Amino acid sequence: MSWLFGLVGLALGVAVGLLLRRGRDQERAAQAERDARALLAQAEEKAARLQERAAEDARQRAREDRERTEAELAREREAVRAELKRERDEAERDVARAVQQAATHREELARSREDLRREREKLDVFEDRLTRRGEQQDARALRLDDQEERLDAREDELRRRDDTLAEREADVERRLHEVAGLDREQAERIILDRLEGELEREKAVRIRAALERADADAKRRSQGILAQAIQRSASEVSAAIAVTVVPIPSDSMKGRIIGREGRNIRAFEALTGVDLIIDDTPEAVLLSSFNPLRREVARLALNELIEDGRIHPARIEEVVHKAQQDMQTYIRERGEEAALEANVVGIKPGLLQLLGRMHFRTSYGQNILQHSVQVAHLSGIIAAELGLDEPMARRAGLMHDIGKSIDREMEGTHTEIGAGLGRRFGEPDEVVDAIANHHDLDRATTLFPVLVNAADAVSAARPGARRESLEIYLKRLETLETIATSFPGVEKSYAIQAGREIRIIVEPDEIDDARAVLLARDIAGRIEQDMEYPGQVQVTVVRETRAVQYAR
Image 1 (cartoon, rainbow, N blue to C red):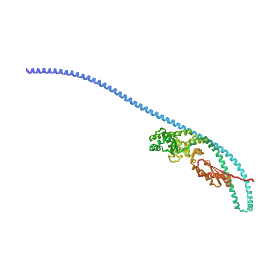
Image 2 (image 1 turned 120 degrees about the vertical axis):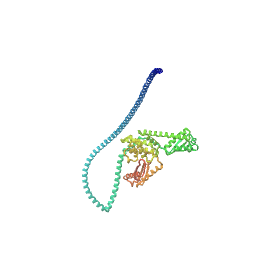
Image 3 (image 1 turned 180 degrees about the vertical axis):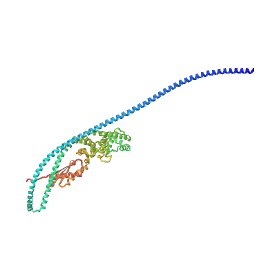
Image 4 (image 1 turned 90 degrees about the vertical axis):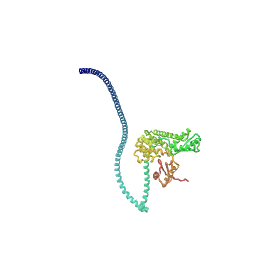
């Protein structure tokens, strides 16, 4: 029975265990369900948070994409604007260049049109001359035909007379031989000597007549033009020397200028390149230099030092530097004034500076800048009288000596240097030709060197325009008289009018009126060959015959 109770107990234990296990399983299931619901709620909450975060990230990325897109669009818009601005600037520059080229083209067309007009006028004048010359040739041909007929008749008549004269000459010759007792050779020698003298006189008479006709044709026009040009030009001529006198308030200032142990005067001379002479001259010191620019800079600096009263090496250096700058301004102003006075426009600033430097250059005492202004006026007057380009002639006259502004600093003649400067600063070919060839007319390619040469001679060679040393002056007069007296038949010679005319007294028995013309021409040619002089020299031969009788 016990085993039955064991089985029943076992069954009851199993049943109770099953019941207990089922309760635990149900409790575990309920707990699992609760955990599942909690996990589901957490998952849903987490999913909601993740969904919200994903939406926020999407919105953030959208904002970033929009900002990046807007930035890219802004950059592209800015690049497009820059490209459009660059294209607009290039278009504006192209338009400006096109306008400038059009203006230049218009100017070139205007100049070409003006050149064509002048050429057309010249051709019209030339055509009129040819027409008149053709008419004159036709009339001359008719006259020549008539003269030829008369000459033929005259030739026949002369032939008959020659025959008659030959017979008479043979008869006369035979009689002369009989009367004079001379043979044929002796008679021919006497006759040829006589004919040679007569031919010499005839040649002199014809030369004199030809020279008078040439003078009548040339002097009437040239003298009128030159006289008018000289009368209309009245620019003054100034002389420059190598020493400048600077007044000082008192002689005590000389010691301050010299300085302790001469340091002030040494600094001044070293900075300016000018000799400062302090001697016994009351209330004045001297500045000595052959360079007028340096001398003027030294004068300005010394005047300012004297007015300021502070004289020491540092102050001297400062004042000299300031005077050099002021001198550059002064030189430019002188160039502008000269261009304005000569009525010449469009000169480059560099050329104006060089033009102003000529204010401090002299030639035989004549100021080069004033001389150039006067040559410009004279060239313009002569060009206007001859119907040439007056503004171009004035420009050529003003620039003809521009090379003298720096000829002491460069190799070459002032004409070569001036022509190079004219080309460098873009001056017209006519002006460059006048600068290069106004002393060498054989190489000139235009008429402007001839005009400038004539105006230069009028300005420089007139009496009183230039100063020369006494030795050169006396030597020129002596040479003129020596050349004149070296010819046979000359009794005395006198050089007058500062060597621009020579009067020659000849022996009336040796030189007749006809040979006087030849003598004057020979002496003038000898002077041209042996001497160098500005302008021209007039040769006057005087022949005087006196007949003296006494009544008793």
